[in-house]
Length: 173
Image (cartoon, rainbow, N blue to C red; front, side):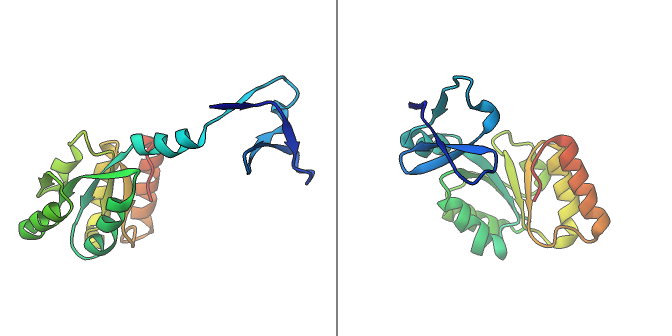
């Protein structure tokens, strides 16, 4: 880790100051300047490997269509995510995707998946009329939620999901 005491003015009169680490500038509020504060800046090694060590366990609900073409390949490439569970009503498709992405936990109902403690977040890629009930159950279970488009059947459902996520302190997209 590195400590930097030398401050570099950013020169654009925005009331902010920057610290320079290598070739990168990090913005710092002026209220921190002049109090003898040393700012710990993570090393390149720490920035690179800290993110990888804290993976998000993702459960995917609905593994056909968009999930098989976009979500599962994307999640498998992300160093910050790990696909820990899959759920689908089509058992043949579910087993095929589980084998392809080496996922051990498979479920035929979303309620079972939401009880899995390894799941931190869920991707909901089901028909639109199922988005709100599944998202609300996931939010109630304390899981972060990504819902495939359309978010809900109407504005009221969408607002209900948003407010539930705000109240539960989870991310909802």
